[in-house]
Figure 1 (cartoon, rainbow, N blue to C red):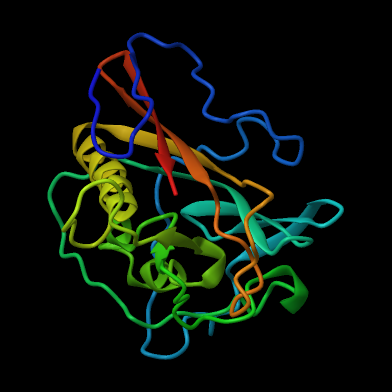
Figure 2 (figure 1 turned 90 degrees about the horizontal axis):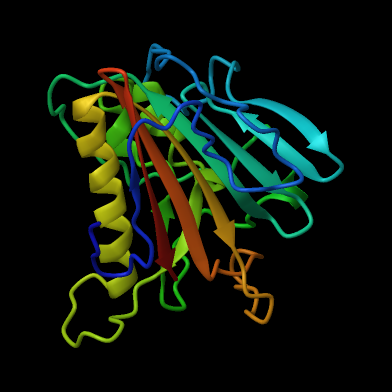
Length: 239
């Protein structure tokens, strides 16, 4: 068992047949997204929706929309403007690829405006725009890397220093980055599938600039397949 800053739960299970990634959620079908590979798209310097193919949007339950971005899926609750669940899967990566970071953020043009965050600008109020599905996973797919900066894939992560004074970048950001780095390392070892849930404390106030509240914590499960053995590890990151 490995424990690091901000991670309250970390478990490893070997030989887990038919491992289920999804926490119980009445809006999300179980085992709904385990693709075998990333689909690679052509990329131009224009707004990254010009081909019109992604995301594929469907209303799974009244007010709950599923957005299929090709290599990953998101579920959005219109009533609260929140992304409540995310899933993605990748084949094994043989090497570290260039990690380009874009500072351009977009609202999702295929989702009704009332369902999503009201702005793509920085949050302020002690929060940082943070990707649920990290752009560095798409180093070989620039089109999907650009899609990862839509606000449906962005949530407000606290940049407070936490209990450690002088913590550059914030306690919670360091914790989230640890999880992201773990996912990347696992991809170097084998095929992976990942699923996560965002959880709220309903007493939190809505951020007036974006129309949604920050989640209280995020749970994420990472499953790696290889050599007839399945490894699973789960994390809880506070916010």
